[in-house]
Length: 161
Image (cartoon, rainbow, N blue to C red; front, side):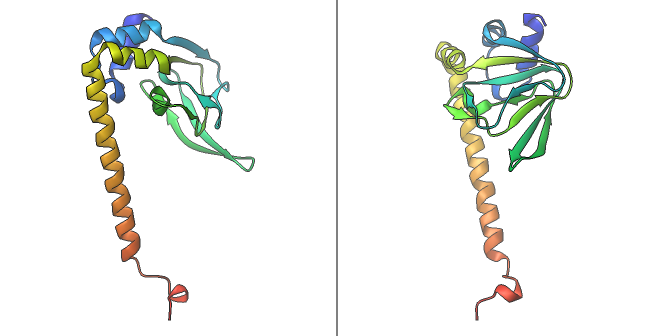
């Protein structure tokens, strides 16, 4: 995939929408393109995550693996970003990613992304605002769930006398 094509895919990723074209091109040039065969694992749950992956082509699935059982969580298509948190903080992968078809992903290591933000402070500010809004949305959703749980009557056999 050409640098221009990869930059165009990056431009469609919501996390990167505040980045100028020059920054997207820099990510496309400096990121590591990884080819996967159908059935190949990109990363496993619990492994250290030192960056994120943008799906350039193909399809991946995210799966949880608990007590020897696999559960499919979602399918990732071109333009999806896997491992967003790992762009900013040291973390582990919460799920396993496996290619459903021959796929290409762009690996963006955390140090590369952080250097990029240093070079584009306006992009860093836009990203901070995006993440702040997401945190607020998550807190509002949690408050809604909490309120619904408090308003739900206890089942008859569990009611206190």
